[in-house]
Length: 358
Ligand SMILES: NC(=O)c1ccc[n+]([C@@H]2O[C@H](COP(=O)([O-])OP(=O)(O)OC[C@H]3O[C@@H](n4cnc5c(N)ncnc54)[C@H](OP(=O)(O)O)[C@@H]3O)[C@@H](O)[C@H]2O)c1
Image 1 (tube, rainbow, N blue to C red):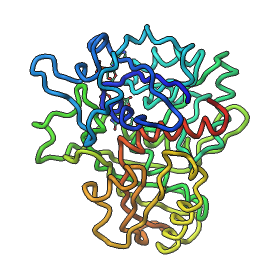
Image 2 (image 1 turned 90 degrees about the vertical axis):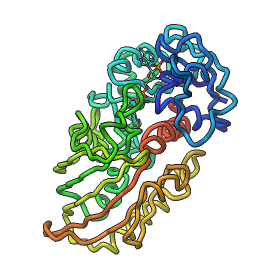
Image 3 (image 1 turned 30 degrees about the horizontal axis):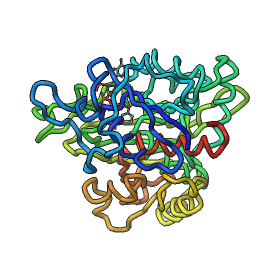
């Protein structure tokens, strides 16, 4: 077993990690850390609101037994020398200072944006851009680190990029328009979105989200050259909104392709890609990477988000686009806290272990 620590264990994504690492066949979660607010408490007590005693746990699974009584450490008390890898689920400002302190000696798998846009840092989605893993070796060399920082993308980029990859491979892509309807849990817990703002409402703005999706999509679909990733020459435009859905980001996507394409061909390309995905043998890889529905009422967050433990990107409403000369349009659903963060991060760690990087 490889020994792992988790920093930011009490937050929305940290809680998902607690579930994703329960009885994991390769990784043993041996230490957890969070802010001063939680340090020194048992995990279960750190999850309680200090005034009301209410448990701030929002998974449908119970708090796993293995972690309930673990004492939450201070970050300074996590000795990287004792671990094979560190998972981090921190807000970006905290990640910027904390992640390098570990990466100097041990691999760090991050859900934060802090390092995603640096030249020697890939943004990794297992099965989509596995060859970008090589950039981690360049990162090690340029920074003089034994470890590295390997970030996932923003959770809104994940489903988008997964569905674009097979289209790009077979038909080429020139332009992308995307409008997201993003779940509440994507905003985290501290402070998160308050009910008074979101109930009976749609909020048409999520700070920094659109820029993240635009930059990350091109980086993930880009080409690795000797020292960095050349972004894919695609135009990406998006509008990101917050809707009163608990989990699961829905995205409406319009793609202008280089070659003419029919919806049936895209369905076929997505299904072939899903069937042949490179990461099938990894423990957290879903049975279906992409599912494509013919039923025009799918995907729906309530119905589709838990398929294959939230690791499947679900597509529907594939139609020919009526504006692009060559193009198609569709709706996708991706679970922001499963494939889009904690479980996706565990899958990434599995890929890196499989490639001998951890
Ligand atoms: N939510 C999603 O769907 C999603 C998806 C993909 C990526 N992400 C990214 O994942 C990261 C975590 O998001 P989240 O939603 O889990 O945030 P969150 O709910 O606000 O949780 C933040 C965590 O960081 C801890 N923390 C805060 N300051 C700290 C410090 N100085 N030292 C150590 N720990 C500290 C908090 O501990 P306390 O509880 O002790 O305060 C908490 O455990 C963010 O970068 C976010 O953008 C989120």
